[in-house]
Length: 284
Length: 319
Image 1 (cartoon, each protein chain N blue to C red):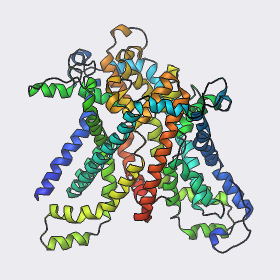
Image 2 (image 1 turned 120 degrees about the vertical axis):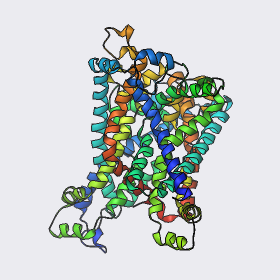
Image 3 (image 1 turned 45 degrees about the horizontal axis):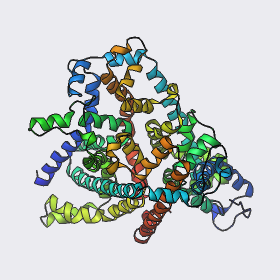
């Protein structure tokens, strides 16, 4: 083997470990007995092994509430995002006279200039009145101009003959979009779905701004509360026995359960992300 | 936006052969998106008038009295302006440089790994941190730097193994630009390498075969063939990064630093400052003024970046 190849194997493997060790420490910590965690503050091997935190979390109400909130935001948000992104992207990609170009500029300008936090905050709280609503975490993220343009460049590669054939057969614009374009666009729809879904699942900034009712907190916001004060973990399981709650272990377990769904979906979804980035980076 | 009635029937290109009814239908299709842009992208731009007002909730956005440039003066006099502007640009420059460098090196090295499954596996592993939320990153960092209850932590235990003194990281402001840079490399190194790898795969295999015949080593090829051919991609990423130079990475920084004032001198960026002033002090006027200042300077950066990119690399431009 050439020296550079050998160095590459070693370096890439080390970087891989660098990426995985923090995750592993969280998983190991969540399975380690509180007595050790309280002493070292972390654990590399789950010893002594303990499932107490998970037992407590699964019997309490907080975890369920958090999952319901996160799932609602992610599922409803992703559906809205995909539909609106695909629709506006198709109208731009159609190259309609007097419509497509202005629409391109219309969607492009916000990438250059935005109003900033205060007007946005006033809009959501005063004008739309979305305080304490999950939609305050969905609507602001509904469209990502960048993903619109990625979708446009995908649509523009659609073979013109198919569309012409449909037109000759008398299909209307709506029919063409829903019955021909969308079924042919599954790869880009998957890319959109995954990017939006991860964004919604990981979102916490809008929650910090607009949610005050702890019962409505999605998982990320529950975790945020654990960062500012580890003893908040004691309130995660039902109140009984909260005084003896393993607060450190609970924090780790909650983190694992928050990353869990992404970790599970990742092996299947990864290739779509790579495709999406590549599409975006090289513009089709 | 005005809708001009398109000519009916086939006009020139077959793509333009649309009846006005078809146009209307398509416009309806785009309507939810248009409405979203009007409300969430253009609405706040109108709301920027708050920056020139002594805002109070009772009188609302348009009812509050004007106060000219007082909000801007207040911000510039506060002494924080220079710090947060410097931090924003300095941290962004560090993040951009480090993640591009890491991504480039990782891509070159991944390219040397010929075993398919191992390479795919490592690629998945180093790409994964991109999907970890800032809050989770913050929890991991606490474990590594200070332990859960502020006891030790992994780094300190390693330090004590080699007889170095323990460091209370969360009170050590000077170290944080570098700590945050390492976090960014962890988060974006793999992601950036995917972009570079995509560019590497488009390089023709013949160039390498020719070099091999001339007796070049793999290292030589990486340095003299791959790197120069990656420069356009590199340039595009630099330009995009410079365009975002004035917008701090709010999520990661705030999730990690939270309201730990000891670290503000080196970690407070415009976005975190604005967020705090809004949430803690509730000073809408000044906060909006800072936001407007950021948007305007940011716009200059972005516009310059777009122009440079279109000049040198038209085909990768978004428009």
